[in-house]
Amino acid sequence: MTELIKTPRTGETLPVKAGKRTNPLANVFDELVRFAQSRSLFMLHYCTGCGAIELPPSMTSRFDMERLGIQPMVSPRQADILLVTGYVSVKTLKRIILTYEQMGSPKYVIGICSCTVNGGMYWQSYATAKKLNDYMPVDIYIAGCMPRPEAVIAGLRELMENIRQGKADSWKDYYRHYDHYLGHQQRLFGETWQTPTDVIAEARHYGLFGPDTLGTHTALLEQHQRPLEALEMKVDIPELMARR
Amino acid sequence: MRPENYEAQRQPPSHEYELNIGPNHPGIEGNYAFKLRLHGDRVLEGKADAGYLHRGFEKLMEGRLWIQNLAITPRICVPDPVPMEVSYCLAVEELCGLEIPERAQWLRVLQLELSRIAAHLFTFGGHAATTGMYSPMFWGIADRDLVLDLFEELTGGRVYHIYNIPGGVRRDAPDGFLDRVRSTLDYLDSRLPDYDNLLFTNQVFVHRAKGVGTMSREQALEWGVTGPNLRATGLEFDVRRDDPYLVYDDLDFDIPTEEAGDAWARTLVRRKELVQSIRIARQVIAALPSIAGPIRCPIPNPLAWNVPAGSVYTRVESSKGELAWYVVSNGGERPYRTHVRGPSQMHAVQVLEKLSVGCRLEDVAQTMFSLDACPPEVDR
Image 1 (cartoon, helix red, strand yellow):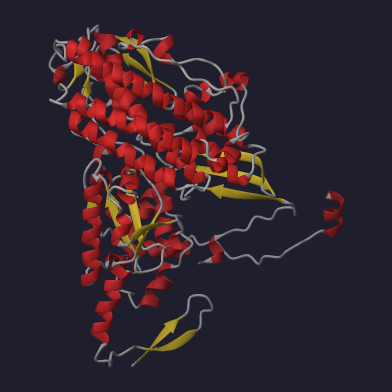
Image 2 (cartoon, chains in turn green, cyan):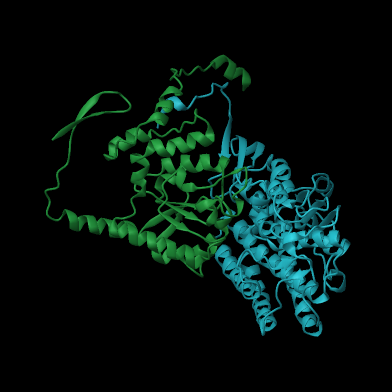
């Protein structure tokens, strides 16, 4: 069975064959891959709030996260886990969303500290976003102010177990319900909010395009998109020479 | 990527370029950004970009009871939370005219000094990591955990211990606690030569840190620098000695200084302060058993506590510098206005902006870590 898919960049439609699983060992391979995924996790080194102070003890000698196969990674492109450690101010939330969208799938989000659950200590603050779940799907919450390293490691182990069983698939929610998440983002940042990642095209790419991917909020996205101007390089060589 | 969302800015051709460090960057000290304009690897201009951690503390505190505010005060500075709560308690006590029992004062001093040790051990690790050495980080954090264990036993919390309350402290030291503090201090003392070999006399570190981010004493005073950063320029100023609070005037300790005013001097001052903090903590342990009495003076019902009208400014010496609270009360059950003077705001914004000019790209992170700025305290 073939499906016509419109490519985002060039706009042409290409026939794509929907894969049918004929290999009898496919499930075995799946299990193996999931096991391997759960035992080699790179977490993004982005300390967003005060919960980040308990991460160095969990990563270094005493609690040693590395024995579980979890290591910090500096770039979002190669990271698997986004740790949101603590309160998220509006300015940070923009960066977190940009970071989250840059990460390659499958990706997992862990909300550490009570502030990501319901606002925590800053429930009445004018500057923080209260529920992280409104802006991006969260796999594991670790409540506490602040959670001890044992709690952080217990949460990570639960995530590993979920990955092994194939239950940690919240990243698919972001594609299936993009309109919902974008709506919350637009409510906070204004309706002209744009991110450089084409989430809708990615949803099509992963085969996760659902009925809630597009909606009233994604329509605003199209509406406020800036027109693309042709770039031209102009190098004024005499002026360059004069500057030297 | 949708290229149409990025508008390329047309600029004249030049050898200069801009570089953003942070907020998501391993070389930055927390959630904080620094924008650089560079020529080659020389920094022409640095611009601090704070606000990622703004929670609106001063406004939040106006809406909460005096006693409720205790819970959020330590959250201002995460690595060194104790001076925040002690300073706030001192402010409320001064407004109410409360007389703090002596035993509570000594317990507070013990807690302040242990917190300073923990914060300095944490800073060394970060500073060493910016010069490419990761072992001091592992050692420092492992040793800091021993101090956190003591805090957990005394207060119940590892990082945030809301142990102080206006009028005293919440509970007395448990049985055998002082012996455990003593043995931890002995262990930390025995580790100092190892730290010297690993970091402070390590030629890699000495060559990298010497001459980086130098400021003179006049500049430091002009820019509002306090704490170890000011003492690294040769000025012997410490709130603990020059404006004593609690029982610091009964204690015997030196104020270490250095003359150079660069990253190396700042680190050395902190290294020497570790010795002094251990010395103060040992004096407290020796004195505490002979000081009997209550740990808390009676306070009115904290849920209906009208603090007398007035305004106070109390300051303490935190591991980052001079930390002060300005608290105004209009006689109500909530503060009318609070303001916290965090030392990191000066260090991370104006001082870092000025020190980074002319410095090399790889030394920017080191300059920031040597100033020991704490981003949650910058934004508040």
